[in-house]
Length: 132
Length: 122
Length: 251
Ligand code: SF4
Ligand code: FES
Image (cartoon, rainbow over all chains, first blue to last red; front, side, top):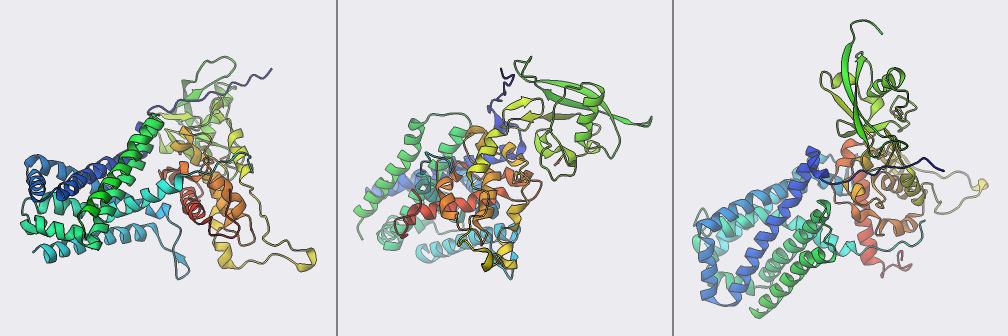
C-alpha cells in the first residue's frame, strides 16, 4: 500500500501574507469606487430624464459636504486605479517592437498615463468650451 | 489534448471588463473631479456647466448619449467583473448568487441608461 | 568548516506523511560561510541534524529547476539564494505554495506534468517536409518572436506565486501557458488552432486575473504573465471571430 498522503495547504488569507498580494487586493478593490461613482452618474441620468426639478435636486445633493467627501474618496481610488491599470499594462499586452527592439515597460506605463492626462485635458477644455 | 474541454464564455465579460477598465483609467479621475468637485462647488470650472439645459442638450446629442452610456455601463461591467473575482479570491464562493448580483446590476443599469437616453430624444 | 563561522537559524516546514497529521515548523542552528546557498544550508541540516529531511535538487546552478521552495514566503530557487543575505535574521523554508506537500520540501508535481503534456510542447509542423526537402528554415526575426519563452526551466515557481492556481488547481497556469505560447509563436509550428481549444477552455487562460507575481518571481525572466495575457486576447478573438473563419475556430 502506498504511504503517500499529500498534504494540501489551505488558501485562507493568502492575500494578507505577501505585500505584493496586499497591493493587488487594494488595486482590485478600487472597482468598488468605480461602481459607486457609476451609480451616482446613473442616478443623475435618471433624474435628468425626470425633468428640470429632479435634475436640480441631484445637483443640489452633489454640492453637500457629504457628497464632497465621497467624491474625494472616488477621486483618490480611481486615480490609483488609473495608475495601477497602466502599471500592469506591460504584462497584459502583446510586445510592441519599434526599430527591432521591444518597447520597455516604463515606456508603456508612461504612455498610458500620458494618454489619461491628455483625455483629462480634453475634457476640461470641453467643459470650458461647452459650459463656459 | 485533454478530452471534455468546455469553451469558456469569459471573453464576453472579459472584453467588457477590459473596455470599462480602460475607459475609467483614461477618463475616471477627471470625470469625478468635474462632476463631483469642480462644477458643484464652482471650483476652477464654471458652476453652470452642468445646468439643466446644457446637460439636456448633451444627453440629446448623439455623441453625448454614446459617452454617457459608455461611461455608466462600461464602468459597471468593469467593476462587476473585478468585484465578482475578488469575492471568489477572498474565499466567498457565493457562486450563482454573487454572479447575479454583480453582473445583474451592471445589466440592469445598462438597460436603465439605454431607456432613459432614448426617452430624452435626439 | 573553520572555527569562526556565523550561525544562522533555519526554520523548516516539516511533514512526514507516515507520522504527521499536518506540517509543523522545526528550527535548526546552521553554521555557514558567505558562499553557502540556502540549498547548502538544507544539505547541512540533512547531513548533521536529521537525515530524513527531504528536498529536491540536482544542478546547483539554477538550470535544472528542481530546487524551488518558499524562502521567507517568496518562491525562489534555493541554489541561487544565499544565506548571507538573510543573516542575522531567521530564515524560513517551506514547500512551494499551492502544491500538495509530498514530504517536507518536496511537492507533488504530477498535476503540472499532466498540464505540460496537454499543451503539446513540441513542434507540430505547418507543412511536413521530407528529408529531401531539407531543414525548416527560420530567420533571426522569427526566432526572436519566441526565444524569451524558451528559457523556462519548469521550476514551477510561477505556480507557487499564482493565487489563481492555488484557488483553482485545474488552471493550466503560467509556466505551461508560457511554453504553449513558445510553440504557437514558432514559425515552424502550425498547431496554434489545435492548442486554442485548451487556451479558450474553462481551465484555460481566463482564470488569470493579471496578478503578475508569476513574472516577478520567474528566475529566467520568461514573463509568463505576458504569455497568459496575450493568449486571453487570442482566445477572445477566437471566441468572437470563430463564426467568420472558414474553419470555424475550435469547438
Ligand atoms: S515560467 Fe519561469 S517561473 Fe515559471 S516554470 Fe518557467 S522558469 Fe519557472
Ligand atoms: S538545483 Fe538545479 S535549479 Fe537549483
